Length: 298
Image (cartoon, rainbow, N blue to C red; front, side, top):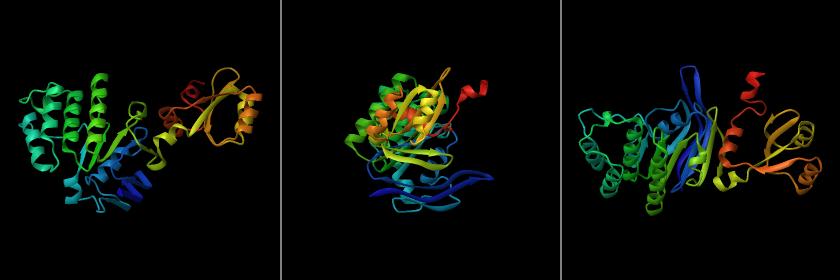
């Protein structure tokens, strides 16, 4: 069963197109990474799915319903980011109590255990927290809600390394005990690839790739050697990225679709192969095929 279905989704703000012809689906009870560079459209997509903003055109359904102004979607989903606003007079304990009233699957025991583990003061105001503390508290709300659709938009911004690790571990343990559909938006795949079952890579407001993480890890290979040999060998390959490394050397990333004969020919040319991890691959896939920051200084 698909919890989310999107077809030809378009969203613009004024003259700026943010999402363009975006089509994808998300299965029930999976953890999916919404990956892309800053400005790719990740936040806009999640806010549409949460029902916060309206699409311009196309179709999008969450639990089979249009998400905008949908009570069904509101009651069964939660969107967590660093900009959640609470009345300044409410203490952290007040906020937990109010969330318990709204979310039917709310787990009070989990909420207070996490609350105490991260050393929050029940009488503290949300507005007085640092960015990292706010995101940690917001993450507690997201996990404790146990909504059928839980969306975290860059949830670890401002958290230190140990808190990030604790959050990811808590998310995984609670997901395994209480499966639900989780969307995790990030431009740092390296921190979360062990959590994910699938990745939706967005580039310039469009679906660039949607694959299980295990397939993504085998999607490409890198090849390095003398520039002339690299250029010669990659002419008949599906090139993802290429750059000059230094002097007469070059580096390229290609789809992992070549044959044993292709690989043997490459070795005869003195080319060296390496695996490309999922995080680096997403960077290469969203970078112009040739060049890079070094070209700015030429």
